[in-house]
Image (cartoon, rainbow, N blue to C red):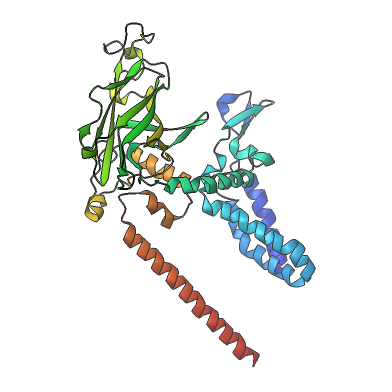
Length: 401
């Protein structure tokens, strides 16, 4: 009974204290009023400010469990236990920050601002448990694709950004130079490679994409491929046998040229605006953010290659000493630390939130030492658990006598 009163007093005082702490909203929105409602501890998984109540709550649950009948345990207690484990696994298997993905940041109703922190806890269809359950299903469906490199071991490992949805298609942006590796197998040698590309304007722009492709330092297109803004093109590459090696490297070199200075475009082109008038006019054309070159498809010998596989550099000063790798684009030419942060964040959000699993997606991280360390930890855990269980049984047996 004493534990019950301690728990109730702590519970009531904690709820009253933390529920009074909220952000009244942006004062510049007057006469509108806002409710940020951060008292529950977002972006956390669950009410982190109430963690101190858990030990006392467990004591209450233990007491209740002892008084339940077998029927009550089967019908009520065990289903609630399974549900609780499932809810916690949602926050463990995936980064809990993504629970607010795909939600509007805020909306206004009758002059009051509601942020996604608040309405996601009030509207069941936007609740973290429901949203994360859907994301768990997507994770289970997409996970095999992230590790699937096909029979030719195709890896988009440098300069080819993460896949993203565009309508019914999935694109991957090629940043300056895209490096794609693949194997040549004796029973089905590579004879033809096909790339589906698009020069996509993010905003009003008039740059043509100029593309040069090489295979193992051999130029594959004697004449540069030109893509007008919004143009799609299927580039077919016939692979000479003497160009191939057991391990091959395909490099897609991209640059953008403005219509004003580029005579390669036809006089009938309708894209005649001057890019110099844009706010980011001081940027070099190759760094102009108004257009992207998207990789839509990739096939070898007429068979589509999975473009969802993830192979990225961790970009570490220890990369070369540990594995002998040399960074080409990311970590080499491109040394912006924000790019490294972006790569780590995308890996973090797209794969299970399990540290021992993530190393599979970084090609400059040594696999064998980590695998051996993981195996030894699993073995020690099983061995220690077995020894502890035997000691408990021995103690119980001795006490019974």
